[in-house]
Structure formats: C-alpha cells, structure tokens
Image 1 (cartoon, rainbow, N blue to C red):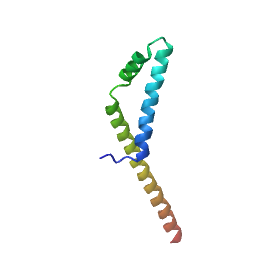
Image 2 (tube, helix red, strand yellow):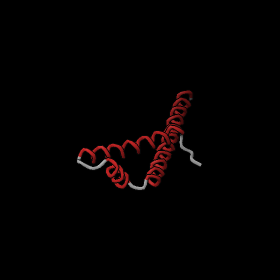
Image 3 (cartoon, rainbow, N blue to C red):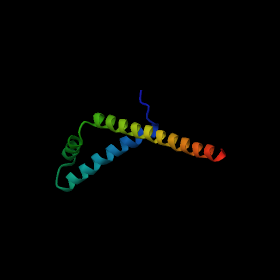
Image 4 (tube, rainbow, N blue to C red):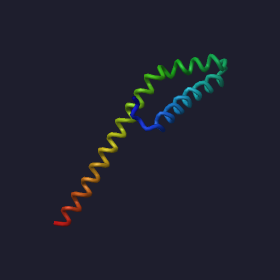
Length: 86
C-alpha cells in the first residue's frame, strides 16, 4: 500500500516521463531514429520502478521531517507563550 499523497504519484510519473521525453528529443536532434532514441532514453534513465520507489521514499522522509519541524515550531511558540504568561 502506497501512503504517499495522490498528487505525488501523478507528479512523479509526469516528471519521469518529462525526463525521458527530454532525453529522447535531444537524441532525435542529434540524428537518432525516434524509436531508437526513446529506447536509449529509457535505458539511460534506468530502472523506472526502482528509481520511482526511491523518490517516493525520499518524498515521504521529507514530508515526515516537515511535520516534525512544524510540530517543533508549534511547541516553541506554545512554550514562549506559556513563559510570557508566568
């Protein structure tokens, strides 16, 4: 079960397609046949699912860190308020 927000999945897939498309376009501009350029771009990108899984993990770790940072900021704000009220 994937616990990443729904937009992450779509955005990540779009980003991967964009990178492969950019590489394909570059190769075609260098004289490659479009089908061969697409295959080469896919090869250069690497194992899509492995890379995708790693990026999702990095995104989830970043989201956790942001939640932790938000919690710490809220705690600090509450602590300052409590001290002022003393």
